[in-house]
Length: 299
Image (cartoon, rainbow, N blue to C red; front, top):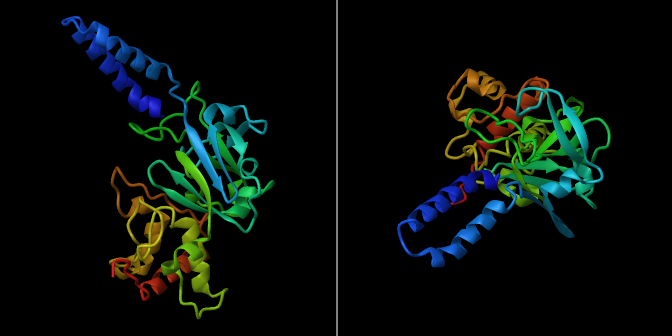
């Protein structure tokens, strides 16, 4: 991916240097520069790397190493979330890349554009039902662009087989991943997201908080809390529950493009198969509750 961006520029630079050299006597001085630039060109454009940071280890994986990983295999993905069609990938079971991670742990997958998917470890470690895979883009067989003028989902993409078995959300399919790191839970890192502590653990508001983490926190902050850099804050200065009618807010979450259509829109639709009506009610309930618990991090 890096090579795809920089190599054309390097080639133009070399052409300019060579052209200038034809009209001056700087050939001797420019030869080392040209040699250096040619070495850059020779460096594999596919030299993408993925960093995995766990509590007791830090590993950097390169594309070639992952493609020849002993556990790598070809997987068929039905109705891929990002490509909206069936796709075939060379992929490694994500659990094989997360040694020592426990089901109660938490990880974050960070994409090149700042998208930060918050992921409970338990689904990532499953060996049956919904299973997580790290798809690896082979530079010899690059994936198609996500849209006209856009890059592909590579070089690394978290995909799922049988996602319906665990109601895997679209936000749990991060693409263009650069880092996967083990972190403390969202509640521990961002107390400004927490509902009223007087509420019971199984209170509907707390259930809505769990759904917010799964479906919204990858793109949105709330009360300034979170690592996402994609969408707007969902409580400051106003909660969407304060400027959307309840029915329209639910319609917007279901299918953002049905209410607001613009070419650069990024928010995906949340079908009932992923976010059932009862869960949508819980999510909106959490947002309404948090509208009464605004905390401005700048004050």
